[in-house]
Image (cartoon, rainbow, N blue to C red; front, top):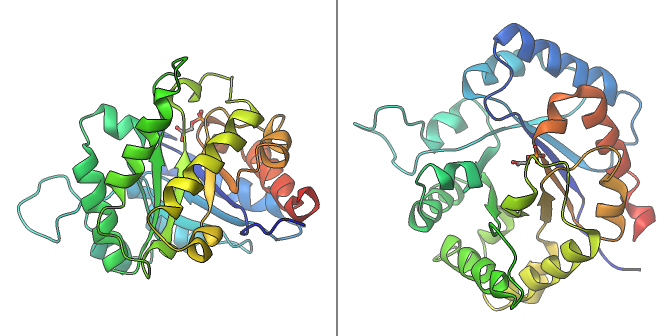
Length: 260
Ligand code: PGA
């Protein structure tokens, strides 16, 4: 039997829903739909920042961690619009997504991604770092692209700190399209990412790292993506705004041991 880390299912609400009242309803509905699960996988939501403390107060019986969708690498000061790692920590946010392709498209560089990861791990916060190619070429150049994205993102991140990092493979061509990458493509990319990581860290640490898949995951395709794709969980956009579907995916991941 292969050894797998515990799966992580994280919903990225992006700039949704439009109001606090709707965010609270969605949160409570996720809580309700998660009831009765065989809690095996870790579950998290990255809501828009203004809703985070309200959702924490609503809490609920199900353990759902809260993450930020982005973070500043500055500690404090004259950086209008930015939110620091310490601010997030002070309201008990577990960590942040970093390098989402939508942030990269808005100008975030590999260097900024690296600085954000360094700031998060230095404060003992958790990181979900997104990597992904915009298209696949027939020569496999996208593998080199992913390798470089990972190497640049993790520059200077120590062996002790790498345990706080989760990699989310999110091919841009699969995000929000209804067509996820195929399970075999995901399995192959996971293997490749592990090989890249093994060039940077001892194998024993790499084996414990979670490599998620993201891009058009829904309740219908989740099982093969976990089973044959061997993803260690998912970063979910659209389907995380549908409480029933999100909970369904969590419950599929809760069966993960059976897939191995
Ligand atoms: P999607 O988004 O699930 O809507 O494709 C994934 C993401 O952008 O993280």
